[in-house]
Length: 468
Image (cartoon, rainbow, N blue to C red; front, side, top):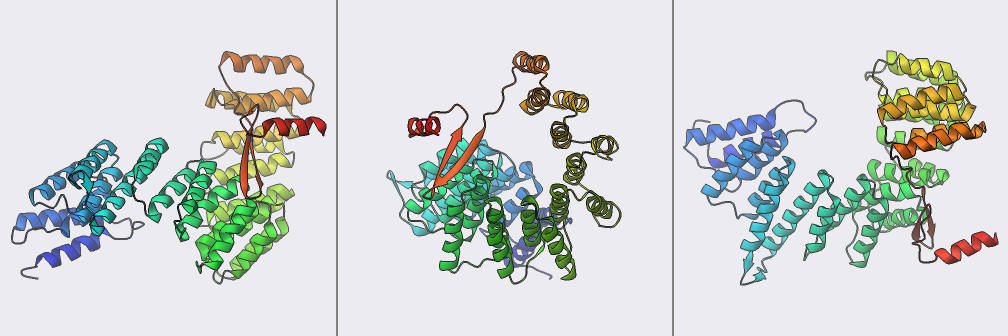
């Protein structure tokens, strides 16, 4: 084009910015270069539709300095107060990790959006404010500051379903499963209808605490509200049912999915594996290959876990060798860990130790803990002591190695060594993480910690235990 207009520039910049995130090309960077060319040309000035794409390009490439310069241009051209521009500007700072600047902008915008002490009752502006708050909450969750995220969430005068989804998924992804479920409960009390994303997010928390009845409710809610149970939601349901002990229900969900993908296959194979149904897991793997679906690394983790739990050592070796020699990805630490667990459970401790020492990648603490667990299982004190020392050097304040070694000594009635390990824990100020369990009763999840009497019916529970 000899004289491209603003629409033409914006279209190309947006297309480059929104290129596939899995694509290794530098198209977002090219979007920034094209924007520079637009400014240099000077024939056409950027408008309110130009800046959001440019800010997104800065966010995707992590170009904070360039983003700040574009921010200055947005102010110069008078677009800083535009809701769409503002939300992408805040998102840019969030994605670049500049949370203080993002928070300053949000506070400034909230003051400017006030009119004589009252928020402007303009629908578009109110919706824009909600988007801004959601972006900030997501930013704090990204850096792991759940407290700041919750404080912002609680301050919101109006929330969208996305606001709730961000908090639920944030809690679940950071291991705050009870908080995620409580947020889901509050969402329903606030008469906000959960959507597809809500269900996928809360199911991950439900599966971790074993709240089967709540999981069934989520499943029923999806069916009654015509929420499509596709490969993603289906996989979440399969994982939930499997981890909550209802493997047959997981199989039923899988069989109802018309076109299962790799994620769905990995969910059902992994579920069967943790239930000790190795033969069924292997059958599903064969069926997966017959249907032309390429197994992922996660699928092979499920298969190796199935072999480990069933004691199928030779089958496990064959699958691992297949990963090393034939598939188009390198084995990950998880695959090596599964092999150590497989060999260890079978009592092949020496082979498992040699396997770790000959790994082409550095073993992590999980790999060594698998071997230590096998030493405990088979009562190998000498190797257990050696492996525990390695773990203590890797993570001196992790209680796992100390407790496992103490238990190995206790099993052999070596109380002197038990005392020595416990004393070392005291000297190193190593604290054992308290045991935690959950039970679900009448749809309510109850949490119990070791030596914790905070439950409102703790006295009744202890009385019943004494009676039993």
